[in-house]
Length: 422
Image: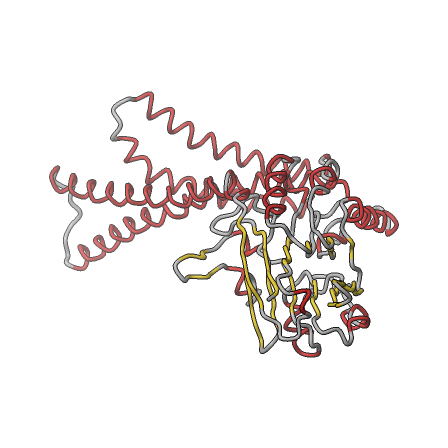
């Protein structure tokens, strides 16, 4: 608790300073309003929102012990949204307040160098300076509205604006019966973050089924941490259809490593329940093993490894063990949650043709338009979204179906991947 207070106090002080500086820029604009009651309402609204956010952080920090662990992710998400929605626009706005202050400081220094004495400004000169200040502040408000609107859209509509991404991949050794095979990939569902919004996910299930997948692959992170997050979701997710089969692997969040447990047995019980849920919704969970896919006496190999990630993420995956039964197959497909596994092991020491991964979420924020492909996550994961190729080996990184931390998506819609083998 002391550690929480040590973090909370500096953060709240920083937020208060941002509020004071922001209000300093807003005050001249409020002064232009004719209705006194409107000025008071807007002032109270400004400080009321800030106080509510302050109170929310305090209640969360000091009341977390009384919150169910699975629900803590949701409450934390509300706080993240509140901070992003009201403080990121303030950061934009105070840049313009700062610019005006720098201008005034620079002008004061110049005047002193020239030996001018301080004088009260004439009314006309004062008016022109105030007009310039108001122009800067108004511009700041307009530009601050852009991140506000983007974040608001991301947390209300963007996180449910499912996008279908399509690729056709050619493999020389692909057996004839598998030509035209349609693989649909999902990744990073994070059920606990949806807060029981069954209807929104049900619409996505319909969209997935409309793709008519032959094989449906889920590449990990079913939950944020806890098996209880799966409660109520079986009727929705069981409706996912695939003509040949549905297969899955575990992600880093599925092991319960991001929570404290009463005992190792409790943690194992949690993981066992998550594994059982995969079976309950009709998925064959691959735990460092190979499944042979057969059509008309021809075969390809589907390999599934447990999570393999760079530290601090756990490394439960054993690719060598998982791929033992895939030796000699004409085409090998791998499911591995973390895309860094591809560079570290897959392309260095295997002949696996196609790997499906997820994990990055595209950081739930980025730009993918007009030939621009950028997300902050690329500085951590160079292969963070879409298709990558090294010689004859392919990697596809799904940008994620759900969300965690920030309960929204900005410029990075939730993804349904469709890959056709030709």
